[in-house]
Every structure is written in C-alpha cells, then in structure tokens.
Length: 323
Image 1 (cartoon, helix red, strand yellow):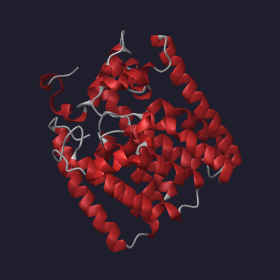
Image 2 (tube, rainbow, N blue to C red; image 1 turned 135 degrees about the vertical axis):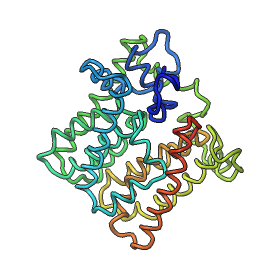
Image 3 (cartoon, rainbow, N blue to C red; image 1 turned 60 degrees about the horizontal axis):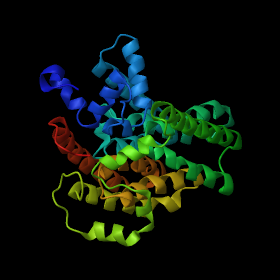
Image 4 (cartoon, rainbow, N blue to C red; image 1 turned 90 degrees about the vertical axis):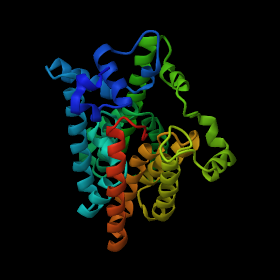
C-alpha cells in the first residue's frame, strides 16, 4: 500500500501486517477474498473511522493503536503494581503496541475484561470488551473457553460475567455475519488463512507429538516465518512462565485465558509469529506472577527483555520478518 518514498520514516510502523490493515481500512474487504481477508475487522473499521474524521491512513492507524495501548496500560495499572507494568512492557515483542497491528486493541479489551469481571458496576465494560475480543484477533475466539470455565468454577462477579458472555456472543455473531454478508460464507476469513505459510490448524492441537518434534528440531534461522529460533525461544519462555505462575492465579477466567494464549498458538502450527502472539500470554504472567517475583529476577527479566526488544524493533523497522 505504501512504499518507502510514500511513508518515509513512518514506514517502520506499518510493515507486514500493517500494510494489510491499511488496505482494508482504505478499500474494504476485497472481492474475491485474498490474504488480506484473513485479518479481523476491528482495527480496519476503527481506522476507517479515523479516515472519516479527516486523518491520513497512517495517522489513523497510529492514533487507534496509541489510544488502545494507553487503555491497555490503564487497565493493567489497576490490576497490578507498577513493577508489573515494567515487566509487561519489557517483553521482547511489546513494541507491537506501537505499530499498526491489532495487538494493542486485543490487549486493551482483554485487560479491560479482566478488570471488569471484578466489580458488578463494570458490567457495561465487560459487555463491550467481550464483544470486541472476537473482532480484534483470532485469539479472541478462544475466550469462549475461559468464560465457560468461569461459569463452572466461579468468577469474581456474576453480573459482569453474564454481560461478558453476552458481549462475546454478540462479537462472534457480528464477525460471522459480516463475513456472510461480504462473502456469502461466515467462515471465509478462517478459510483464507490457509493461504499463509504458517500451517496453523486446529487439528494440530490433538497431535502433541508433532509439537514436541517441532520444539526439539533445530531452527532454520533466528528470524524466520516458520521454524524460527526466536519463536522456539519464546515458546520455551512462555511455557516456562505458565508452569511457574498459573498455579498462583485464584482467578479461573484469567488462568484459563493464560493457558489458551500460551499453549494454543504454540501447538497450532510451526511457531510462526509466536513471539508476537505470546505478548498476550505474558500480560497474564505479569498480572499473576509479577507482584511476587523476587526483585532481582524481575529486573533481570526487564533488562534482558528490553535489550532483545530493541534488536527486534530495529529489525521490524527495517522490514525484516520478526513475527
């Protein structure tokens, strides 16, 4: 959508998926479907709203993700102490909160929902966040499982849980209805994802041996679309953090969400983009384990995380594949 000359210094903020989101915001979902159709509609819809207000395409995208990032940190600050915010912000791929990707929207809705479920007066926020999650990213569809677990094993607040469940159902219906209206097939967006090289598929979740083989197979390169050394490294870190901290979570919704966000993306394919997807799982780690981590360990993780983040952000800004 935008060349080096057209975007200038802002090109570093719109690489890879960012170009798809800009295309969708400017031109809508294509007929017939192409790889851009695989992306979830919330971000391009909000960017289109920015265009209607007179912003340029890149400015609209950056405005949306900046506001969403601010919202994510607002909710995180109400759920955890300041040191946990540093722990979250230092994750190697947290720079995706500053580029035209949907991570910021997804995390704002996820953390907003986690906060809303703790108070009956926040039922309206729970409804809104529940509806936004399945429209923001594919991982939002998995929230059905944590909501179900919260119903069976207890939730901090039932009124907010009812609202969140209704919101989630509404969001899924809007997503399916939009693709049915656009392509006469409510699952067209999922089908188009087969055009990508990551080999992601739900049946892979039932093949743990395939996943183990992938984990122990030597990577091709440190940065690559599949079998990436970075993705393998972050899978090990993410699963280790999950094993360390999930037992400490008294919140059934948050614990199950963490499991879904850490395990499912790792097992579904060849690790493609896991380093980016793991950012949401790391938010759960920061919430649950951040307050109790020994300060020496916590600040060691923060320092190492920011160092790797600088390297990855530089690579991404140069239009090199990071995730």
